[in-house]
Length: 401
Image (cartoon, rainbow, N blue to C red):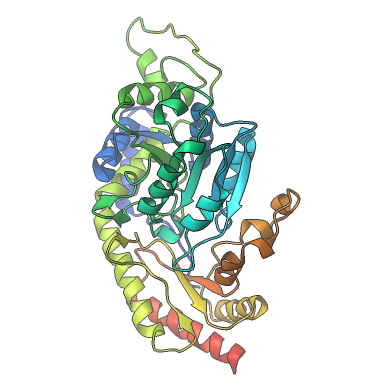
């Protein structure tokens, strides 16, 4: 069976994790701090805080920004449930909008129509690793300034809606010469096992707010917030006579460990090699599948933006959702794993109960109903890529005969 997205765990990773285990320091420590520094350097952002997951990083971020009951946060209907769950758990109201006809990302026009005086943030999802149009989103936010009503000093200092990049998929993607992590006010990465860069579980918050914000103080504050509000972490308390600490505010518990960071440091060191291989796989899929009239191959590069080649979102022209599912079954029958990214939020019970209806998001449905995600990972060989292509072609021909 060709798997969908296994992590790249080889001897180099095993050796680095072993070294972390043998160092006597396995929770947040020197490897985590180095990993944060390397991410800041790689992305070009102003500071980075490593966390135990995208979800908790975003949850702490919304809490810090003061988003809560009575506020609205705009997000796309086409995303994973984590994007909306953090809004709901904050007490704010999620406002779903449709995606753009051009790609799988949030529509700037729909965002513009959805903004009210309660809007405090926009969560733009870089679906499959292709960046959103942040230039247009910033234009929309600038035009909406007269409507903005801040709730606290942080919000009032910015004086506008906060633009958050849900960069769970887009580590290494670029736009106008900048790398994901520095494209929005704040970006949040996921380093889950299936991501391009993994720490098994984990994530990072990258801050790129205007220079008037003290990013060193933000870094200090977040390191406190992700450790129950405690003023010193375990590493700091090991220094001679440094045992006493304070709890500044009731916080969260979502720090990254050195065991996770050990994997991430290896992954980051060879990330260019990873991206290059993924790009070759994308191009091989596209060259082969573009010869078929039924294939809608994904957009992954234009004059301004380039994906990080995370997910290959193939669409089958003219098929219904049941036909798409049947095609997937025939692909699986040939021992090839495929997936769908994602089931749109309005299809899921938790959000149906909150009044969201799929018919209100026609472009999201148009993209989802005929989408099949193909395997992409570093160790996928050219021969396996050809096997995937053959399996897809055979399955489509069976269903469309």
